[in-house]
Length: 192
Image (cartoon, rainbow, N blue to C red):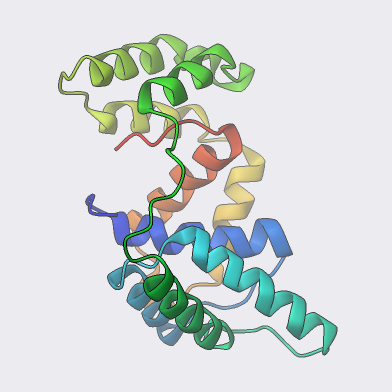
């Protein structure tokens, strides 16, 4: 979350989650963007946000209430975050798999659609695991170039941008959306 553009990546992942998991799409105005940005500023874990979104969607659908803005999720996210902060003090969860294991698993199951970039992915991750400087920007540009004409990605990106307030439609947000979409689709480790 401390990486450049981490705020946009965080926000875009939440918007994508609602679309992919619950098929919810609505106009993202500046108030919605502010709510998402505040969650990022407070460093609310995305897993906690997703769980909160799931609960609200289930409840509102059962009651047949509309879900057309992020403010309907604010109370649940705030409540969940407060509980998390109280209960999580001093507690350690299970160890996550190490970076090396995650990268090796990805390379072992390398997606066929990414085969033209396999050597670039391998070189990038090898440098990173060896503690060398690995420029993610070059790999990101190659990835975006490979999927430049992808109809599904272009349609999802167009929908996403159409549902953002005009002043939020920046190239950096579009780029972040495209990269996050590809990361989620192919399950590769973060490049940052």
